[in-house]
Every structure is written in C-alpha cells, then in structure tokens.
View 1 (cartoon, rainbow, N blue to C red):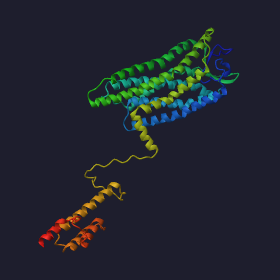
View 2 (cartoon, rainbow, N blue to C red):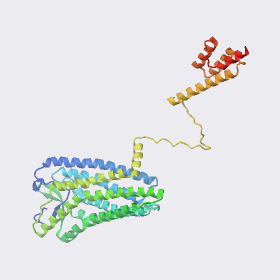
View 3 (tube, helix red, strand yellow):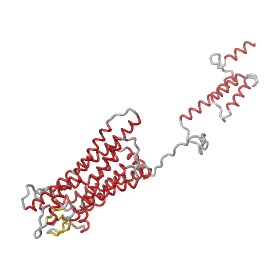
Length: 444
C-alpha cells in the first residue's frame, strides 16, 4: 500500500477509499467515470430492496412475539435481520457516496466510525449464526420438549453478542484517520510503530476468530442437526415435528452457507492488503501487487448483497414467515379476514337471519320449479280422489284451480289439463285419467 514520507507509521487504505484509478496498473481499461455511476447505482438498488425485505421480516417476527411465539431461534433471526438493516441504512449510503467522489468528503466522524461499524455488524452476524446453530441442534435433538425462555435471558444473549463484536473491532476505529494527499482527503488506516507488533498478531487472529471459527462451528452443528432429522419416527405427531425441524435446519443452514460464500472475497482482499502493508513495514518488496480494483469492488458488492439475501432466504424457506407475510400484506392492503362462523349454542341460534334477500341462483330456481311441479301433482291427486265434493268435473276443476292459485299464479299444465277436460277434446289414447271413464261406463 501507500507509505507516507516523513512518518514511521504504515498506512493501509481502508475499504472506503478505493478510487485512485490512476495508481492501479491492473485496472486501466474500464472508465472510472462509468464505475462511479454504476457501483453507486447497484448499491442503491441493494439498499432499497434490502431495507424493505429486512423490515418485513422484522415486522413478522415482532408480530409473532406479540402473539406469544417467542423463542431463542426467532430472536436470533431478528438480531440477524437487525444487523443487516443497520448495514443497509447506515453503511451502504455513505459507501455509495464515497465511491462517487475521488476524495473523501463525508467528514471525520463518518471516516472514524464507518469501517468499524461495518466490521462490528459483520461480527454480530457471525456470532449470531454460531449461537443459532447450537440452539437449532438442541431443538432438533428433542423437538417435543417445550423450552421456555424469558425475554430478559434473550436480551442478555443479544447484548453479549453486540458487546463482543464492538470490542473485537476496536482497532478499526482506533487507527482510522483522515489523511490529506495530493488528490485531497482520504480515509486511511494508519498503524503507529508501537502498535505494529499487536497488529501483526491481530491481522492473523481476527479473520480466524470472526469468520472461520464461528462459521465452522455453525456448519458442524447444522450437520449434526440434519443427521438427527434423518432419523425416522413411527408416530405421526413426531413425524410432523421431524418435518418441521428439517425445514428449520435447512433454512438456517442456507443462511450460513450464503454468509460463508459471499464473504470470501471480502476476507481475501482484507488479508491481501494487510500482507502487503507488512511487507512494506519490513522494507521488503512484496511478491504480489495490490489487489485488482474489480476484485475490491466485487468484494464490497457481495458483502452488502448478503444483507439482501438473508431476508429473502428466511421469507422463502420458512412456512411460518410466509404465513406471516400474507397476514401482514392483508393488513397493509386493508383486507379484513372473514369472521369465523358461529357455532350453534344457547346464545347463537342456528336459524339463518338474512336482513336482505339474496340473489337467486340457478340451483334455487330449479328447486322452486320442482316444488311447484310437486304441488301441482298433489292438487291433481286431491281432485281425483274427491270427485263428488266438487260437483263433477267443473267442481273438481275449480278446486284444483283454487289450489293452484295459492301462490298467485296459474300453472300452464294445470290450466291446459282442465281446459281439455271441460272441452271434451280428450281421446282415449291421450286421456290422462282413463279409470274415470271406465267407472262412468260401468255405471251406465
């Protein structure tokens, strides 16, 4: 990296200041002005989508906690989404602004805290995934056991995670400063001579403690948890719990794998820069030059894209989150859920009370027609069984007409029937009641 003349301290350009294009021999073909527009645009899209997804996931978790569905795993997922949201809201906008300028113009406070805050959030996510894997293994080992955890215990665990992360990353805050150069102000990491021995150890131990160890522990526990999920159970209730445990393990394992893959370029660039700085301290010529700018930019974009990938994994692989997302969408769109049907009881009458008539359907019309035809048949049978009460065919016709006019309408079949009987136009073949004619002939 750069070595300042007149001082004994070593200067390592922080990841914020990576826009000295003329000094990068390995990056000559792309136009810097195009990248100063393209990279902030990409970061802007990641920022907007990531904030929306993380806020949605946190709202679902908060709603579940309000309903009494609080657990350590859900609290750790909430902490992971919270760290991603902080990165997207307080780091990505300043990083995009710094990429669009050739010099640092965001002030001393942002320079002092930006890289430290980013590293702290990354460490929080690493520690959270490690503790989450242990909690997942305990749940999968005995899913029927109800583990009750109080809110105070959860807050203590989260406070310990954030305190440890902010403490481990203090050197990033302590040695960062603004430095004036020919092109203007730059934000650099300057290590004084008395801290060089400490930093030489810190550079090697820091990636192992915040990246390799937590993710290795997480992968080990998730592998053991997945092995527990593979064991078959004979009971149907245990089988459903086993399927639920397998889905939970798959979701958390996907979060760990995504974190491990997307952070690899960041740590490669981080170690590359520190190695070159150490060689310059010793006065030796490094065997390799500075990392290419494309690698640096790719590492930054992939690191920030993880904050967008995490909530997408949670919202897509968790059935509980999908149901919560549907409920949240109904609330936002003001779509009320239909009220549950009341069960019959002493206070809930079973008779349907409709304040206004409902529109008739084809099924109802067919039912009414069948009822009308059955009523007409009954009227005909009554008229046939009581021939003497009506005073002959005319009386029977009047009685049937009276019955058919109860509903306020004359049925066409009945009207035609009595019209033919009164007119005497019925033949023997078409006579609907031949037994009456037979009785009349026998009497004669």
